Amino acid sequence: MRRTAAWRWLPPLLAVLLGLWGLERAGADGRGSMWRDESVTWQVAHRPLGGIWELLGQVDAVHGLYYLLMHAVFAVWDGGGAGPGGGPGAGGLWALRLPSVAATALAAAGVAAVAHRLAGERAALWSGAAYAVLPPVQTYGQEGRSYALVAAAVVWATYLMLRGRWVAYSVVLLAGCWLHEFAVLALLAHGVGAWRSRGWRWSAAAVVALLLPLAAVSARQAEQQLGWLGRPSGRDWAAYGVVAAAALLLARSPAVPRALVRVALPLALIPPGLLMAVSLAHPWYVDRYVLYALAGLSLLAGARLAVARGWWPWLLVGALLVPFGWWSVWLRTPESRKDDVLAVAAAVRERARPGDAVLFMPARRREWLLSSPELYGSLRDLALDRTPAASHSLQGTELPTAQIWSRLVDAPRVVALTDPADQPLDPYPREAVKRQTLASHFDLCSTDEVRGARIAVYARPGHCP
Image (tube, rainbow, N blue to C red; front, side, top):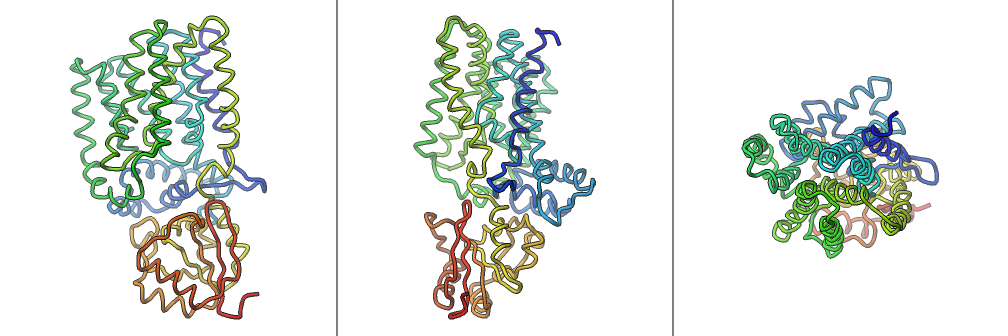
């Protein structure tokens, strides 16, 4: 392989190797792990196409294109002999995450292509490699959600913009926006340097117009979709400040081509900065929603490294590799995510007896068992009214308060799945009656902490082992 071609294949190869490393996120027992957002992907993608379409009319329209893509992935994967009935074993986890691995490799190649066009081969090699090794990129490069795919679409749209391929630019960026609406913020970043171009103006109009149907549907779903978010925290602002300071410092270097700065700096700063500012009034910010902004930082870092002279830039890179290495190892463990639905399911399987009832507190934690249908189907869900598929929802709907109470007081033994003790309690009447009835009519037999969850076993007074 010619040395001059290294910028084409080394960054995506590095991204693939990092993506395949520890892809199952296995714990000490060797069992793979999966957190609840990935569980949503798994169980929605396994619904029939009609069921997915009905769901999107109620919730999660913003992820609709991704669910359809994953439905196709699992149709091929399960057609090879692995079915959804037993839940996502090791093979299922690979199918869940491989599209993100491939998308991250594609994004790294795109970053290199943008840098090559603006700053040459050395900058291309370093920029693509920098993108691949960033810990947040590695995180979502191994996650069964859409963010790595969105980043790949934005990066390649950036390259097509530089080439003046406006039809292709519109198609690729629109695909990114339909994978997640907040990719449209990249359009504003591109506009900083391209607003005078007639091609960009027509493309921007086309992308916005064709995104409006999705925006109209998701706007109606915004409260239930994003209602859990708060305003950006001090930690969010600090992280943005570090990235912004690094990007501005790199952009000030006279060794970095101005043409690259005009593309990379707006991409690094505008999407996250604007989303955080909007979130002061309407909390919509999560860093993964604008993961693609890290491509801008990678372009600046790669261009600067390409012309580095002396020892201090390499000393700085070496110093960064130490925490990056530790972070890379940690993010491949179950502890790197909020919870582990497969660990919760395994713990319930160990504790549950034939005839036991299960209670989810709060109801949205039903997700912990939905991706283990053989286990969930063996338990009696006391509060469930309509299943997720029947109700066209993610976690199903629950019975009225009186019926929950009536079913609960008749149950001899209950396995309750709750949030960790430090989490706030939901104030809703259904959740309150669950807690009150368990406290007044049952003895607490055992409580176990599992990653991001508590499993409490209750029995009628005097019937604990």
